[in-house]
Image (cartoon, rainbow, N blue to C red; front, side, top):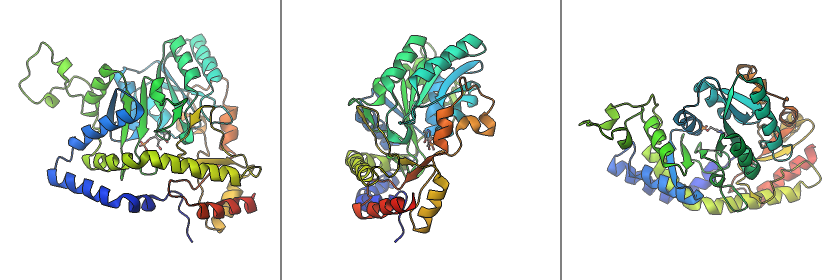
Length: 383
Ligand SMILES: Cc1ncc(COP(=O)(O)O)c(C=O)c1O
């Protein structure tokens, strides 16, 4: 029996007729770019998270870049973010000419440590070379960061807050989605994400209509918006008047159509992921360090990540019995060559220790108790 790490085929079997019909509708109307499903999806995404607005785009990386571009973040600005994350969180910062400032994480949740965040902001201010502008918190492995504490720090220092919820779309803290605290929440629809499409895709959620407007312009080459044209006459397609330097970052209509169907089953899938996480926690209790979720938090379990003194050895043993694993993330960003020169005030000992210990087990909504029993047995035998 081969065990998949993420079983997209099983999910597709469950919803195939609806997906097929949605694809056929797009083929019939032919509006492949910015078609009606794109607008419909944006409305559904916003409603799902309790945000006023949603803006779809080409991927979760562009989703992070768009608010930075819209806010005019650039040279001389500091953007505070974790180092124990996927590259994209930090990558977009030098894109706009600013510098990522790496902040350490909490050892149990792997999410931004609000105390270390405050200390990093103080260190950057004391040095005086960079101006603090934005905090990017990450909902790593699917669970919400400590938003009440992080938002309080952002407010105190007058910084914007982005929630990078590429792994956490759908997660809540005390019943609220991250948009309750963040100026912008970004997500990715990469196929392996909890809410994934059949290619690349992303979105930004916000309550700020002016930010939405600027990002809508930026995702289509900086096209003029109605508010840019106030008091002017331009008797042509507004996309041929460019009021910003933008990019081409639209979500394909086909992907929006697929996501509309996937969103319908997403709440049920979150419950199924939680049930799978509960079974792992029960089966691995006392065997390895299992994940801890922030008090009041509900994870969407993008990953089920355990710790081990020698994770590479355990990965190799599990491979021999057909159990796939992944190491997220073996090298924190501040130790990656292109990022090593960016500020890391106070050091990042917790991130460094985590990267040496973590490994993730198969996790998806279609994981059966029988398959999980095999995985649990293999981990028990392998530690
Ligand atoms: C935390 C985080 N941020 C951003 C991204 C970027 O998303 P995308 O791959 O859609 O560009 C990812 C994707 O893996 C991610 O895990």
